Length: 460
Ligand code: SF4
Image (tube, rainbow, N blue to C red; front, side, top):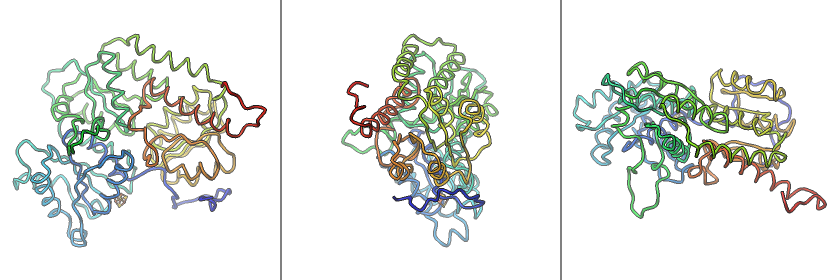
């Protein structure tokens, strides 16, 4: 029992977080920056921070994630990191030749008060930024928020830097993607293309962190939102932002800067959230929803109806990011399952409000919490007091899964002990089908392994 010291008795805690259900802000900024074509993320802080950010993304995607660091020493911690960042910018453009360097801060550089905007301006004045190359930035103090906050800050930073309005609107819609897998970004583009919607996806990590093996190393893979598209996003007629926590600030920035009206929708996980996504996209892009998409929806509904008896009433514990948890909870309710325990380390009162709307009638016994003290320790304590049938969340749930013998669906970030998440989408109706298939497989495998011989079924 790896978690044998987790007590069943729940005591009120005021300051201590044990096994947080989140990671740090710069990881999100780094992931968002990877969704920009030809961009090298840069961590303005110590080498240790950058190693952690890179290794977490590398382990999740099984791809070498590249990033620069300002390599703070004791001296820069006391006197500021301006000299380090100026040298970094010059070296990176000379040696690694990115189109863009996306700088994010860290706890240390935020605490000493480095002004990234001013340092980048000085780099420009000193001629360290070659013509046609760019340095963008965002602030990511990791003692507030989570990796989702960092992602949101970098997306907003990119829009702030690049989006331009010519005053002439184009027949095109911006899709701002929340934190999802490259497979999901590819699926969102496939759905938009099936609908005939002319769109720009920002950011877009497909073909970056899931690029194919070609036998030769390419430091800047072919994927990622291009500078031209980011500039053009200012002339789009509307923006559809998927995932409030990760995209709202960017959508507001684009509206304020370039007068592009926006709508926020949930990440299209499950039937209802996908319904809302395609309906809003069809209205904004002024296109119809094609028969092929209706058929995908119908196939998902058919599978759910066929297998309902294996899903009905099953108790589920979830952890992760609000933007993914909210539509996932809604989907589980559509499957007639019971999301009973939910934690997220990402703060924001809106999560409790949304979950209250979804759960108060259907699962009144549900417990949920987000923010600093909403950790894996508390989730485990809830489970010890009344068990669940299924766990859904990132890799860190494997300890609870092993100790309590509960089937475990890996979903969210990070997943460092399995593959598949980068390659098979969970968004859209096809993604919903994959989620149902995975859940059924887990529940049925357990039933097959544990049921009495007299109840063992060949046909299920
Ligand atoms: S010090 Fe801050 S920025 Fe660095 S790894 Fe830790 S939480 Fe992240």
